Image (cartoon, rainbow, N blue to C red; front, side):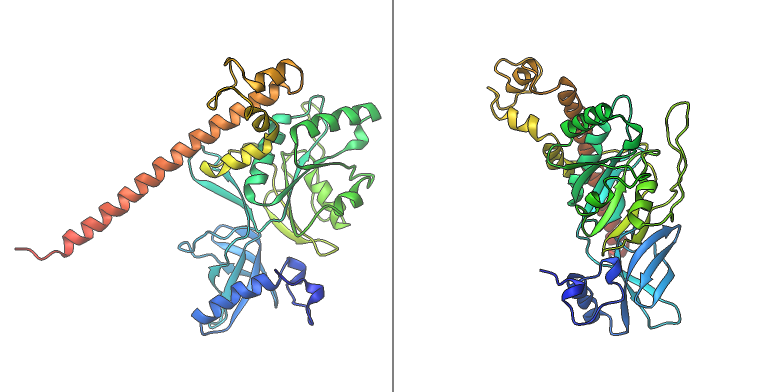
Length: 361
């Protein structure tokens, strides 16, 4: 169990950035391995080959060694050595959670969007037809991170009372197990209620134009992040946020604002359980299917199809589940193939080295 900043005798300079006793214990492990002076820091922003970090002495920019694993990202806690004239990045403290997606290129490798996140807020803008498939995709990533997901419907000032009721019902049908909130950042409606549901480090996740930066400004209490209106022609947003940035919030929270995501690929095998949590209603029904390997397509005694026929479950929900399940299985297979290839290459390199050093007859 960790100790909060309020429970300690003296405040730590990094308390506003989420520092606690658990991170102090993790840092202590490195003091035994590095005799020189060490300080912790949290990654605020990443650059090519460099990091902006917050240290007990203030903000710093440090180089990011290519060989350092895992590669530091926004939200990571890192260890800096102060033995030289400039701070040296020595290690990344073990992550508690990691919000990751498959690489946009479709490769089997993953991209960590933010580390040590406690709450993932999936931001949804009102539309004629709510993008429920995208909500389910984002929620699967959120569950997979180990953080607690919430869904926020923004810009409710643009909706009539009946439209808001309909939009909320649609989003709630796709967000089982996650809290759903409606806010208007422009008018301040629902902001304090949402703030009361947030904890720890909060990351905002959603497409461009969903209102993430406007929501972030409302939580910050100031217009600190740039915003822009969506295009009138197609309602699509512009990328006002171009990098992931970590900011302390009033009340002890920490915020990670992210650029809008066009492509959100699921990870490999690790996302299977998270997919089951996103579609818990389908999974619960599947237990009652006659066959244990039921594919919910045309099998007799399929409880899922029966529920769809009775109007209990929407056909769209099952189609979305199948789509994400196929994608997850495909990426899992590619990940396994890539790992096998990497192991084979390592063994080949070892054998080449052994042959090079073997005495010649």
